[in-house]
Amino acid sequence: MNNGNLYRKALEALTWTEASSERGSEACAVIAIGHKNPDGDSVMSAMAYAHLMRELGFNVVAKTAGPANKETVFAAKAFGFDLPGVQPAVSAADSLILMDHSDYAQAVDGARDARILQLIDHHGVGDISESKLLYAKYMPVGSCCSIVYTSYKELDVEITPAVAKILLAGILTDTLNLVKVTCTDVDRAIYRELVTILAAADKLSYDDEFNKIQKIYKGMSEAAKNFDGMTDEEIFNCDAKDYDISGVHFCLGSMDWDHPESIESFLDRMLKVMDGRGLMFCRVGYLEHSYILYCGAPQGASPDFGKNVAESAFGPSVRPGVIYCERRLSRKLDVVPMLTKVL
Image (cartoon, rainbow, N blue to C red):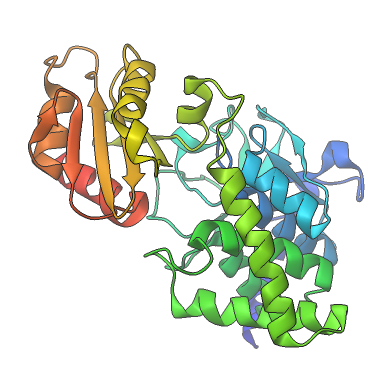
């Protein structure tokens, strides 16, 4: 039996009829959904994977756990597709496919009570578990959309130009157009194949299609750094994730700020948002360097708990709440593992 047939058998073993007895009814559909404070990769991977499941005959719809950010909205408009509806909470009656995460702390509200059928993720293995059958697929790649692409190939389902646009948008955002430290040769090869699909559909040369996509990415990048009209709390929350490590719960924000004239005031603004919300950390990418912000402590712990953890992981503070790092840190490859080691 080939890999595609094995994959199909694994999915069929999940007894989808218990969650989607009315084939085609959205009210009875399995929900493919990314993490809270969704980024482009979590949204696009849910959309593409839901389409794949529907092509296999399963009743699956994509949703987002919160509003899409500016970069995702721009990408959808530029590539010409609609974004899923928002579903901020689920119930015990719902069945889920969780995309781009595998931690309850990052999952949509109510996920602990829902039936989780699948996990598709490119981060470390989280704490989500199921007493019933569960299909999980993890790959060390730069984008969850790259994992979804491999599933299409394994199951021999055509990647149409419409799907290629969705997958490419997710890869663009999560690999920063293939330059992020987490990007792999797998992501690069998939990127090239998706561009080839779109070039054929648009009747363009590969180079012309590539240049067209570069212009779209430039707009995406500008949208991602456009905080106009946003409160400081919205800026912090646009890419913040919750974690539970060794019984310690904390929130970790991640953003970039490339304006030398206002970097110090921006750090102060983010620290003000973090104050009074428990144990908080934040990675601020600045040019080719990084700042780590810290604030608070778990209930019952020393007030210096956050400070001690941050300094043990990243070095001494340059001023209260702020640590300067000489290199550009990745949240996934650097910040979370360094905090995990200390905790």
